[in-house]
Image 1 (cartoon, helix red, strand yellow):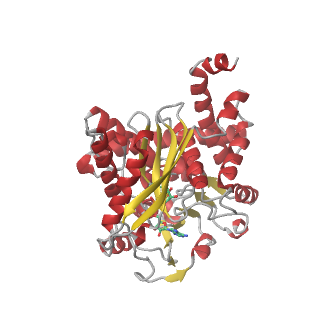
Image 2 (cartoon, rainbow, N blue to C red):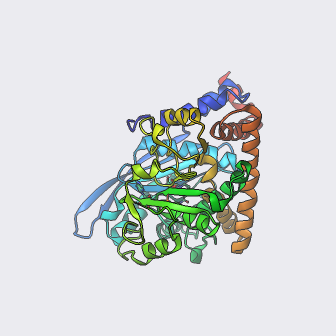
Image 3 (cartoon, rainbow, N blue to C red):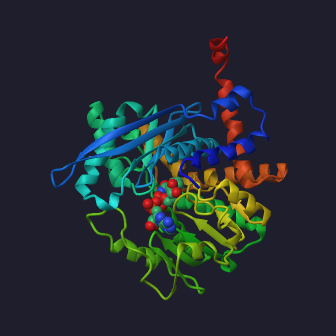
Length: 429
Ligand code: NAD
């Protein structure tokens, strides 16, 4: 699949869901385009004295339901097409979880593993300098995504506060707790996915002890979820990162694999450079082999487009929970559905991250901070309620969970667009 088609592919899901909702033609047309797109050049002084210019992006897709919200990704493959697609998914994710936010996303085309920590800080501050007029606590609120983390969010909040000449913790979420981050934000995406899995699996009479799981991607989301599932009694038999994966039919000891990965991090890098391939009794396998394992649950938690029409027929899992954004393309959706494989979509399953980001924003604005228990309880409530609602829609309309999630989000978006009145009508005529 060419990079250009990621957004077209994302839009196909919208087209499918639009058949099940009654929205005006104007509303449908409006939702097909991002509200605003910013492309910036970020000059960075490198440690050797040379200058490198990086390309950065920020897309605000729709702000009908509130200020826009979405992460910042650092990756060599970041493109405007990818950022636009991620902003589109954020719009629906926030609507699905009933958060008072629209959708946005940002990114820089960079391999952060090649930069020193100081270079990474200069790049992160330079990005905020370039987009400062495009973001704000009531306008657009970034957060971490692939290869960005609380430390980077802290630098970014500090830079924005310097520019505005006032402390502005609510401009960005996923910050370190010491400067206004929320307890539980780091584990929120995985925790939210875990609550959704625990809501869904009993409907199929699956018990954890007899359920095998494979997780692709051993980062913030994937590794924490693998550990939660392990603690919940599930048998996690395979995990992988960008270097490859490991498999053990008896189940892997996920806490020790995580501990090893964390303790071997090099200080110069603010992300893990290790591979999980040399740690426990295991067989080594490739990412392609992991995706095709005969397991009950498959969890793609790395990047988009991992399951496409090319490998959808190889998938043997019974259930797929999308923790990554866009890991399955629309052509693969069709094949998986025909083969009776249940797919639980990203805009629901990984929404725990943005939900606790919302909690962080609320805490920053109120100045009142919550305990970890309060955060997790509130997250659980939201995930269980919205998972049940989407399940009901999917049963009532006999549609996939993905289309049901879009229908659920679209109903909320449509209602908000209508509630804003008829100004557009008068302007037009
Ligand atoms: P991360 O940077 O912490 O981890 C990414 C992991 O994927 C790393 O272990 C990396 O080695 C692995 N990886 C990269 N390429 C791979 C490949 N080709 N095959 C297998 N593994 C590969 O990122 P993260 O925050 O865990 O995000 C992972 C996914 O979850 C992304 O799609 C992201 O958009 C989505 N997501 C994350 C959050 C969050 O709060 N962290 C929230 C919502 C969605």
